[in-house]
Every structure is written in C-alpha cells, then in structure tokens.
Length: 241
Length: 362
Image (cartoon, rainbow over all chains, first blue to last red; front, side, top):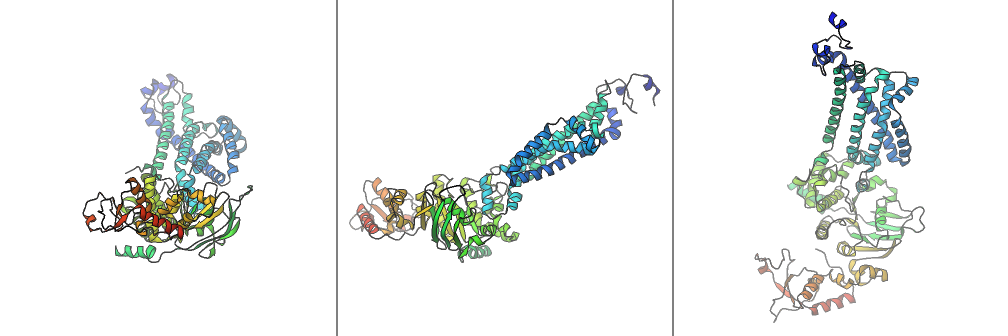
C-alpha cells in the first residue's frame, strides 16, 4: 500500500486504486471504474439483474394466474385489486423490516418484497388487456367452435400482448429502481455500492457509476421489452400497403 | 391449375353440401323476464335455400339465429340440422360445421387473411397443404387476389374486403349451413348493393342452406328464397317467398312492415322478360334502350322519368348493357319489344290474380 495515502486526506473506499484523480476527489475517475469493475460493480450489477428478473418473472406468474382467474370469474378482480394495492402502498423499507422477522434478513425477504410490488401493475394490465379484446372478435371465435381455452390462447392472449408488455415494462423499471434498496436486508445489488458511496463524502465516482448502471440497466431492459413486443406483434406494424 | 379446378368443383359446385334446417316449437325465455324472447318458432329451411329472418328490433331475429348454433341455449322445442337435433351435439363440434358471419365480421386482427380463413380447418386438424389450397380457392371464390391478400392483416383491408374475407372464413370447412347476422349492415349503400349481388352469385355456386338476419325488408326481399317475418316478442308473423309476402301479406303487421310500396317492391322481383311487351312494328324504337333482364320496377322508374316515352327492350342480360356504351356489342342485340304503361297493366292484373312465382335472380 502507498504509505502516503494513509497519511493523506480521508478517502474511503479508494481501495487499491489511488490515482491522482481519486486522491483529489475529482467528480468522475475512470481509473477507479477500471480497478473496481470486477470486484465491485460487475457483481453488484449481476445481482441486480438477477433480483429483477426473478422478481418480475415470479410476479408475472402470480399476477398472470390471478388475472386468468379474474377473467374467468369476474368477482376475483376486486379483492385482488384491493390486496395488491395495499401491498403496493406499503413503504418499501417498512416492508423489508416486516419480512425480516418471518423469513430472516436474506435474499428471500428481498424477493418477496419486490414481487409484491409487481403484482398490482401486472395484474391490472393483464386483466385490462384481456377485457379489451373486441366483443365481435370473441363472438366470432366462439361462433366458429373454439373452446374457451382456444379462445384464450389463440385470440385473447395475443391481442392482450401490447397491454401485457406495457405492464411488464413499468414493473421492470420499477423493480430495477426498488432493487437499489434491498441491500438493507441482503447486501446485494447496485444498492450496495450506492450505499457505500453515500458514506464516502466528497468522492462521487462510485455513486455516479452505480447509480448510472441502475439507470442504464432500466433503459436496456425497457428497450429489450419494446423489441420483444415489436417481434411478437407484427400486425401492429402492418399499415396499408 | 387443373388440380385446383378439380378441387374447386369437388369442394363447392359438383357436390355442394347443404342440410335442411328445421325449427320445431323453439322458444327462449331469459331468466327474470316475463315475456319470452322467442315464442314457439317453427319453420323449415330446405337444403340450399336462403331464409331471411327479418323484423323490427325486439323481434328476436338475432336470438333466433343464435339458438341454431347454440350461442344461446333454447328453453324449449328442438332444432334439427339434417334431421339431427343440435341439442344432442357438442356445441364446439356443431359450430365448426356451421359457417358464422356477424355484422362486425370479427376478423382476428392479429392474424393474416390466410390465417383468418384457416381458422376452422385448423380447428379440424387439416394438414397445412390442404389448408393452403383451400385458402387459395376461397380467396378466388370471393374475388380477392390470393397473392396480394393472403399475407395482409385485417387493418390493411377495406370494409368490403373484410366482409369478403369474413364470408370466405365462414365457408372454409364447407359447412352445410351458414348463419349470417346483418353481414352487410356496416357497409355503405353502394358497396352493400355490390356485395349483395356478389353474395347471390356466390350462393348460386355453393348452394348452402343460409339463415340471414336483417332489419331491412328490401335486403330481405333481394336475398331471400324465403322470408320469415318476426314481430315483437319473437312471434312468427309470416314465413313465405318474397313474392307471396308482397302479394298476400298475412296481416296488417306484415303489410305495414313490408311498406305501402309493396306493389312496387313486387315489380322489383319481375324482369321485363315477365312482361308482355308491345310489338315494335310501326313504332320507331327511339326510346331509351334497356336490357330484357332489367327489373320491371327500374323500367317503370325510367318510363316515368322519360315522361312516358316507351322504352326499347333489347334481348341479352345487359352485361355491359350501359346504353351509352358504343363498343359494338349493341349492334348484335335484337330489339324484342317496347315497354309502355299498357304492358304494366297486364302484369299487375297477372300478379293480383295469382301470386306469380318469384322471378329467377341472376
């Protein structure tokens, strides 16, 4: 270690990279990024992606099942909306704390909280998408002898796709943002370096890098979902030739 | 080319599949409503005929139609298709054998024209090659260019094209019965008339048993081999051929429903071929020239518009029979006679005496 560093100004978390940029607390130090990408940023980003994908996937399965149930049995819709709205309004830090008692401070607590925040958005969008399939299209499908299952799989779900993808986009971006605070229960995700950076006083590189990665991740995920919808809905692209 | 023609003939013309439809004392009463929507409806539609259900709103005409493919379950009575009760059949299996066209058409927006038409064949598990051949054949049948149309989405079609795709889709599995609920209701009047004519040509080819719902008596007269007039409460007021209904309405309700101009409508069912024309000898045929296939109603209208000047009737069906058309075809058409008000007198006496059989529509 450089003995000068110990005697110099307090520079927390500069780790092994003590370039002049870091020592002088410049706004953004690429050297710091280069040195800390593998040990800090990349693992945090990877965890963040995993946290998000698992939360959105589980949320999609649960909300999808509830939405199909509500589509078949209309009375399911109101209580589900009420319950998921309550979940959605619980302050996130409070929810993490509430979950620590039953499941412990771990990634399971984090995922339960994240999933619960996706439900309202996904459920409402799937139910709305299914409901807005034009009545004449549904009648034609039934009149030609499709079973309820065939109507759902071949007609209603494809036509609900834009609404479903819209829900997935909002849920995904929301979860990427929310996942920056799950560090309080499981010490994972981009929240970890952000939290560390907040204690680093004038040194901002880590905060900017980790925060920037979260924003970038949200933009990329959103773009991927837009691209997926583009591929899956060729009929929306077809305009009069 | 040859194989396509053969398939076409086998599928549609040579051995047309059509079934007799029989409604026996069918009734429908909705829970919580005092009066039934359909009351003891009995009628038989012979195989290959068009039966038009017509009536004011609240007469249950759409309900009656939807009872046939069990989109609505009847409360009483029985419905026989080809002698077999539809109530004993699985609704899905039954519906796959009944073509279904609704006013809004209900094309699947996320599927191409070809996929839309293939709906029922796919449900029936046909192989891809057979489906593709059938789609090709049906697009040609409804006068759409298969190469151009196959891959289009419904949003890329005009109203008339959508309607034709809807009919092609309903015909896809060669069903013995077609149900059509105001199929031209959402089309503008000019295109509607064209689609109606096309539909009649198509029906002359495929000869399906068709139940056709409309609220428009003129459409009913034009399209129907038989017309079932329903009144409020789902009661059958009269079931007869258009000519018979116009000549002898069963009661005041029917007379009012077909309109005070029913004598004129009746003339619309006859062509100049049904009229005793005045021989042209001695008179120079300088009046307006009309084809023998023109309806008496239209001829009368021209006669009035021309201040009573006799019309010169030419034989032939008037295909390209626009009288301003001078491309030589006119020379070969023979003058068969003159149409005057006197000729009309004879027709009216004839019609009044014995409800003349309905003129062939072609």
